[in-house]
Picture 1 (spheres, helix red, strand yellow):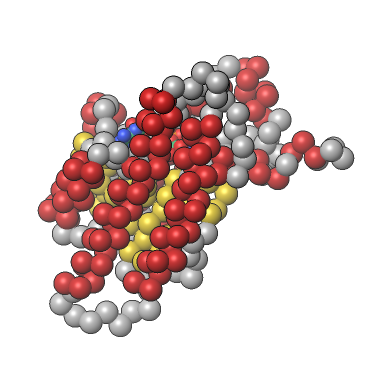
Picture 2: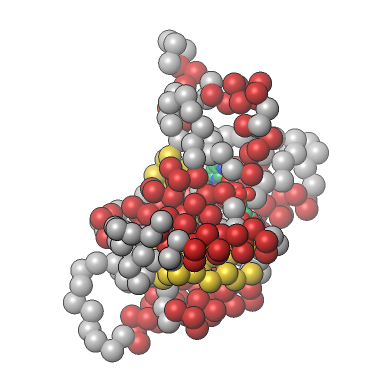
Amino acid sequence: MIGPDLKFKDQVVIVTGSSSGIGKACAVHFANHGAKVVINYNSNAHEGMQVLDEIVSNGGSAILVKADVSREDDVKALFAEAVSRYGKVDVLVSNAGLQKDSSFLEMTLEQWQKVIDVNLTGQFLCCREAARQFVKQQENAQEVNHSELSIGKIILMSSVHDVIPWAGHVNYAASKGGIMMFMKSISQELAPHKIRVNSVSPGAIKTPINKEVWSDPDKYKGLLQLIPYKRIGTPEDVAKAVAWLSSDDSDYVNGETLYIDGGMTLYPEFADNG
Ligand code: NAD
């Protein structure tokens, strides 16, 4: 429900891939804290409408825009729609992503390419568009901005698999490893423009992307072995961290990756002396 903490009042936030899972939780969280939210979906209009309805019925403000983040024209149109409706963009949550799993020996070029196109090239296209928009807004501002604070924030959705190798998912791990260096490099380049760029790297979060694991009791038990904190994460766990990184409370945080993983990256297999 909207309020009472309207930390993002009147800020315009684009969340890609927000018709489900982590993106949906981010869209709802930002809207509940006063933001005007651009919900993006690629193929499931019905799910996108449900997120829009949830935000609007809670008293929030949002629009729903179809765009495939791996297509340059779609990404440009997504930002144009956001600016046309709300006049500006303050935050990009570059979240859309997918898996096309296969053993390495069996992996097709199509499986490799699809994951790289959406998870890596899609983030490049969205981040470039956001950065261009932030710079343009600053150049077109009527008054000189004397604030020391950031003029635009970008959060990239990475994964613990930007540091944990993942057999059977090499396309996905390569895409997220790529996000790590992409994020750091653009953060270095954009910081002088007062644009902040950071990533979040979730561990196991209960969403449609990994339903096959958490809906099977045996696989779920196996998964918990990998999590020292002994629970699967929720999309809201990630949304709250994304919101902090997007807020002025983290204004001096640049080029960082925040792991939201219940300790998955702590080498849990060494907890009993290795
Ligand atoms: P999800 O499947 O619910 O969400 C992915 C979203 O991306 C969907 O809404 C989907 O429609 C959208 N999408 C896919 N291709 C798209 C495209 N070409 N254009 C626009 N949107 C597209 O799963 P999720 O777990 O919420 O995943 C969100 C992000 O979180 C992904 O980047 C994923 O890699 C990352 N992540 C998830 C977990 C986890 O455990 N769930 C862990 C680490 C990272």
